[in-house]
Length: 119
Ligand code: AMP
Image 1: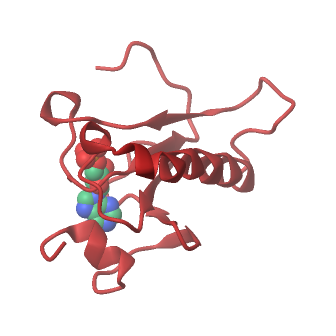
Image 2: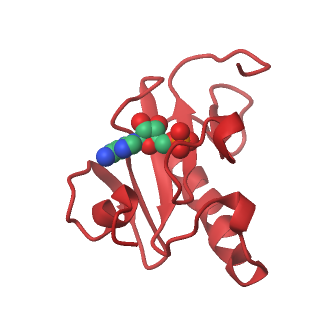
């Protein structure tokens, strides 16, 4: 998509601090972090958001969660066999939920404890 900031980041036409990349996704630090660690996991395919997800793309979302698990481990936020630590994974879906970039992305937020419910 021509005017999509995340498409530009994926194509390296806009700057980012990358932490992971493969054929399906690119992950990079959020420019305006809400916690000590705030990473966005973004599919290379332009998908508007969860509200427009097609069944043919459901494997991409599954992969985004698997990459989140790998990043969470790499950054020392969680380990597979412990209740300690942790992080939050968030999809904001539409304006009421706070979605501001309409290219699907999974927030990985960690490095501090968090409250529930979210605001
Ligand atoms: P959302 O509000 O769920 O759509 O999340 C969009 C996120 O993208 C926000 O947390 C922004 O801080 C982040 N963001 C917007 N532009 C950039 C950028 N150029 N580089 C990194 N993160 C960005």
